[in-house]
Each structure stands twice: as C-alpha cells, then as structure tokens.
Length: 292
Length: 215
Image (spheres, each protein chain N blue to C red):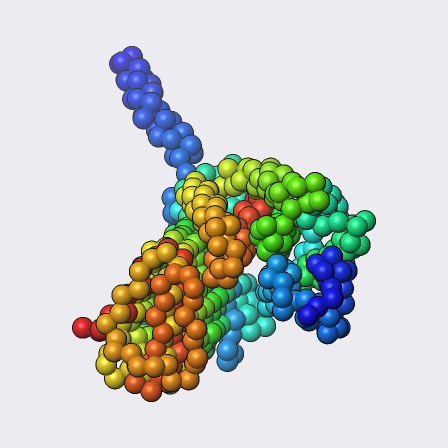
C-alpha cells in the first residue's frame, strides 16, 4: 500500500525530468517563425516603400486597389511594421533586441500591389523579385539579387554585388553596380543606362527608334545581341580589351566620331542608325553578336 | 599668341570659371594642355556634382580645413602665391551644397579633385623640383576608410563581406586607372574611368557609414 504514493512521486519526478528540460529548451530556443498579414486600401498611383535588410522581397501586381503585405519572420526578434500614410504604405523590418544575430533578423515579404504602384525597395541581403508592376521603381541592395519582370516606368536599380535581371521591361532603365552582373532580356525600352565595374552585361532586346543604350563596365564582358533589321548608330570602345563585331556597319549616319588615339574602338551604323548604342569598357571585351 | 603664362592664367581662373573669359586667357588655354586639363576637370566635376540629387549633408569645416592644409602642403594649391585656395574652397562649397553625400564621401570627392589636379599636370613640378604627390592625402583618407570599415564589422556577415570585397575591387580599379592616366595623361577615356572609380568609392563609403549610423 505504501508503494502507491512512492510510485506517484517517482512518476511525477520522471514527468518533471522530461517536461522541465523541454520547457527550458523551448524558452531558450528562438521563437518559431510566424506570419503577419495586413491589408491597406489605396487610391491610384500609390507609393509603397519597403525596407527589409535581410530576406526575400517578392512584389506582384494584382487588380485590387489594395496593398497586401504578408511577412514571414524567422524569429520574434524581428518585427515587421506596415503603416499607411495617405496614399503611401511604408513597410519596415527592424530588429527588436540589440543582441539578435543576423540569422534571427530574416523576414520574407510577399507584397501585392496595384499595377500602377510606385515602389521604393531597400534590401541588403536576400533578394528582390518584382513582376508586372508598371509604376516607377527604385531598388537598392548590397548583396541581394534583383529580378524585375514585365516592369515599366522609370526603373532605377543600384546594387553593390547583387546581380540584376530585367525581363520584358519597357521603362526607362538606369542600373549601377560594382560587381553585379546585368542581364537585359527581351527588353522594349527606349532608354537604358547600365554601369557595372567587374560585372558582365548582356543586352538582348529591341533597339527602339530614337532610343539610347549606354552600357559601360571596367572589365568583364559586354554582350549586345542584334538582328539584321535593327537600326542603330554604334560606338564601342575598350581601352585595353577587345571589340568583336558581327554587325555589317556602314558609316555613321548621325554622329561624327573621331577615332580615339587610345584603345580599340568601333564606330558605324546598322541600317539607318535610328537608335544610339554606346558601349565602353576599360579592360573588358565587347561582343556585338547576331541574335540566334 | 597668348601673353599669359600659367601662373597668370591661374590668377584668372576664378573669373574664367564664372564665365568671364578674356581673349588672352582663351589664347593661353588653346596652347596649354595642362591648364586646359584643369579647366576641363573643374567643369566635369561641377557638372557631375550638379547632376546629383539635392543636398542633405555637407562636410564639416574641419574636413575642409584638414584637406586644404594637405593640399597646400602638397603644393596642389598655393594660398599665398596664387591666392586661389579660397576660390577652390568656394567651388568645393558650391559643389558640396548640392552633393548628397556624408562627410566621408565628400572627402573622397575632394580627393578626386586633388588627384585630378595632380594628374592634369603630370609634368608639373614645384619650383624646388619636387614632384607633386597625393600620397599624404591618400594616407589620410585611408585612415578615414578604416574607420568606415569598422562600422560594418558587426553587421550581417554577408553584407560586411560584400562591402569589403567590393571596396577592394574599387581600390584595385582606382590603382589601375591612375596608372593608365599617369602613363597616358592625355587619355580622357582613362581619366573618365578614374573619376568614375572615385565616385564609386565615395558612394560605397557613404553606404558603409550609413549602415554604422543606423545600427
């Protein structure tokens, strides 16, 4: 009879031995990731600013006059604030305790916006993907890659070593980086200005009449793809590298070029030279190749 | 034929930059590649500065004082002899009034100008025969750079590594461009790349210090 209480005590000690360390472990480990969802009604041409130092930022256009923010936090050491001021929605990721490790601060954001929204995005590491947004866009990152699809408006992208891919974009594009690679695919833009120091630049798009296309790097490869029906006036100079050309160029139609005394240069017009293409590199290779 | 020598032209430089251009000064400029290089550089810097966005931060006075002292010490400007140090300071102030860069980045733009002066006149020597050098100025700026690097030490390791790697890339790029300009001083293409490299460095250091400020 006396063994019953003793057994109960033994069992409760056993339970405690399992539960207490378990509870302690739960307290000691970072809180599990969670999800925040917020909705904001907006008018025409809303402005959406996004500041998310670490994590993936995905922005998609939808048909609603509403901005929806879905945030997935790695831990509760990071907070995602989203607030509306008139027709602007500000989304800001910030750390709560000072001693949080960089891994704790990750937040992935999925944001749906009206297609005429203007975006301002800051993201240090992670990535930025934007699709079908037609408003102006300013994206700044350090190591994060940037991918824009079917974007229009005035697009300004600045990275330190994040790559930039622009697919089927039709706005005015200005991109700069130190070591990021740029790829412009199926572009229909009348103004492209891209500069990267150590990166490669690929341009595979249309040269629109009166368009200007200025691609510049320090070293790496600048590759421009053209079709025989394209019409552009070309200037390609590499101070210490090579210029390889497959285009049958005639004398320059609109611009008078003087051959530089330094470096390798190529000037001329393809067809009537309606667009202006300016390629320059310090130590890299410039390839002007026929489109497949 | 111009009746002006380089010193006389430099005394008129402020008026020249303000648009007052005597026929003698114009004639001198046509015949003097060194002075023409300086004027082109100043025009280019002024245009670049004005092309940037509206101002938010100007460099503190101590930075100008320190740099002016360095520039005078190195013989890049001569306050007493030519009386144009104040003029240059005025241009710098005009430039900084529209340049949205923190002080450190502003200092690098000043370095750009100083190096531009030195490179514009590669054969220029002081009356005592000493070759112009920007090394002390560069050393000063390197100290500031170390300070900027320390700002990012505790940040996200991916970001810190990226900033460091790219700073090294830009430094290498500056060194190679400087070498090219020194070998071919008339090569405007190389000079253009050198200015671009300094601007990239200014931007990068500004980003690094901004991260330190907001941490």
